Image (cartoon, rainbow, N blue to C red; front, side, top):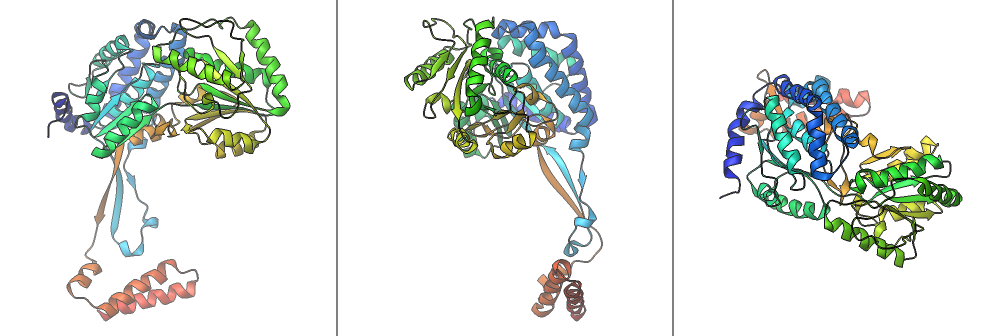
Length: 486
């Protein structure tokens, strides 16, 4: 069978044996040099992001370079322990496996394909690549066509850090390269992008039984409880909706405010919007985002929602950051994803009612809760369908290098970051060594003796797992009778 990208995959497979045969410490030397290059070339990196998606140096430093450096430092500190072989305790060994000594090893998947995204073109690409390489995989990376300059700079960064030939191959930053990589003869695929594309990839990968991590869209909820710090919650809502011009998968999309504080929240929000200087229209990266914004806004207004600030006239290019007040549960914005600065605000009476609104949405990426009652917040978090829940903050904690990040439902599966993200780029292999010559199961196969075999097995069951010592002692005697009768 012929696959796309045969030359690139073949080169990656040739390098795989050499790279996976190195120690974790040797791989981490590359990660350390990469971290040093990130710091040294910070100006080149933020300029590349500015060229591609028009972000300021301050935003790039805060949301990309600092989290990248933290993630790489985490690998340097902990990867050896996380990936180390794990010996199974003899206390956990069943009696019927006497003589067995078991070790769980973490082996690389092999050739890992990574289809990158553009909204955080450094962090959301470099960290998965670094984790895959640390785990011993070779990588074929398809950068986003929206961030070609960042792809060039990151490629040069890896070269200067000393990545070996064939260990990392960078495909052209074109739309066509993504489907080609998904159809290539790879062993694992990691994709960050839209739910629509994620569903197509999942279907095709499932047919070929290729495992994957899919980090897809979100429609995240922010809860404002009666005892919340309302000024802080309002600032968080603005930040969560507008950061990176709303082009964030875990941006605040739905704000659920408890009825008793709804008026106070509305007044605080309106005062904030009257004074915030950044409420001018913003440019989005693609035309489809603008179309999506306009459609959801129009639908919410038809359902009786009130825009904040008021819509005085239609914005021809880009869009104005907008909150929608008192949005009914059946409005599209309450259940569909959006990649623009638009957030729906709904007022709820009971937690059960708000949970029902939350569960009508198939996306389950992240959520936030604003309250002083931490016990209530943690109880609520346990009921929320979300991969990440932050209490009294939004967005920023999800970049913690030691925590996993991923969603459920239409937001995809699998995780990146943290120990779990690193382990997901490996497959467990158990190596079991049995010492001694005691193999009663062989004898039973060669010379069947149903009576003695029954005594041995039943005695083992009673001896190992009975509740009372008398039954266990009786089981031991029964097992010994069976053994001696042979």
